[in-house]
Amino acid sequence: METSTVVSSPSLLLALLIPLIGSIGVMLNGKNENRREAISSIASVILLAIVCSLIPSVLAGKTLKLTMFQLLPGVSVTLRADAMSMIFALVASSLWTIAVYYSMGYMRTLHEHAQTRFNACFALAIFGAIGVAFSDNLFTMYLFYEIVSICTYPLVAHHQDEEGYSGARKYIVYLTTTAKALLLPALILIYVLTGTLDFPTNIKTGIFPADANHALVTLLYIFCLCGFAKNGIMPFHHWLPGAMVAPTPVSALLHAVAVVKVGVFCTTRTMLYVFGVDTMDALNLGIPTAYFVGFTIIMASVIALSKDNLKSRLAYSTVSQLSYIIMGVALLTPNGIEGGLIHIVNHAFSKITLFFCAGAIYVAAHKKFISELDGLGKTMPFTFAAFAIASLSMIGAPPVAGFITKWDLLVGSIQANQIGILLILITSTMLNAAYFAPITYRAFFGKRPATEPFTGIKEAPLSMLIPILIACTISVLIGIFPNFMLQFVKAVIG
Picture 1 (cartoon, rainbow, N blue to C red):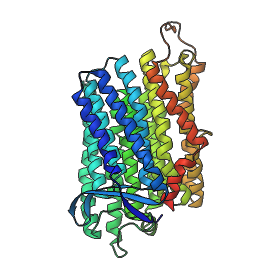
Picture 2: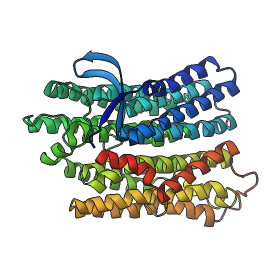
Picture 3: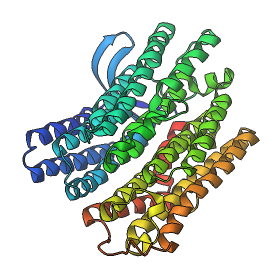
Picture 4: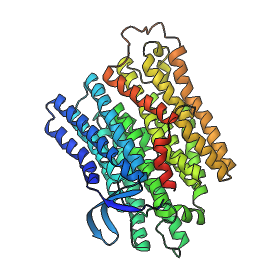
């Protein structure tokens, strides 16, 4: 969509600074846990309020901008709020608000160490995510993409044991190596070819000149697709299951808010605003990409079936679900792009619900494995009911949010005349049901072993249960009333 007005907005800088200030406040008040967590909570609410205040201007067709530093002609650190920015910014800011309260209950109940560092790095990760959301160009986006990687490393290594350090090393090596080896050279070559790294105002044309070498543009596309390794595309996905050694609130952050969503947002932003629909169509980049990520969708689902560890199964589910976003955009059809972009929202709320439930199960019953969940639904009905509802979203069943995604993707594949993609989507839906349904069945209909009675097992503390129910409720509401977020998606498509 061609925007009519560009407006300078200091609110963008304020939105970026709030989580940074919150992180500093947490570190300065580390010895007082009540004050420390109050600062995190207040910062999250203020950030959400600022992001929401931008909605009327963006929906009115305005593009909000603020240039902070000019490095070279066409290379600057500039913030921008447009329709696509708002999709991710709203997700990140709203889920931070929920996650802050959940983290308080989880970390305090388990008496986790280094809670000050945890809260500070959590806020810094949101700082990076908001920077990515409001990036006006590839350079700014790359800068904040790297900030997210660095700030989340201490969170993955939180337990400071051999397993934690091993998972954190894999995490940082995968993400920084792909960024340095693929993304950075791609950025330099794109600048040399085009003279700019700024995103245009619509998704049609991209930034490459018509006479650009087709082979080189294709190579740069591959570098960008694989370089944003946070998107979890196979074979660059191994960091994601390895990061499950972190505390559950970190897993929720990684899988629903900051890290993987940064990856798919950067990937789709680059596909649509750097290469553009016309260029991708002319060079036949879209459909091969859809089939490439289709392999990830199927294989990750198959691997998820084999995992007994609950968080591991959820991790491979995330690997699979992320590729729905890229596949939808790669179809280059209106419904395909709509399904891909709206899944950024739908997956976020549903997946954070699932990870919150996994954490609640561990806190209340000290169970990590699916084979240990028999009968727990009788003593933790709210937790497992929320898990069941969020699972339906991942499967794509109405009326939960994921249904909107699956419907749009199926229609988009038909619009693109791609029966193969249609079959991938149907197969993956069946696999989704195969690895989620047994969890709910075990919980509510499984028989508790005689050696493990229900004694002492009850719901997790309210500070954890309430955020679970809020996230679950939102997941249902955005499935029943999808039009609010679809306004931004449709504005992107034009």
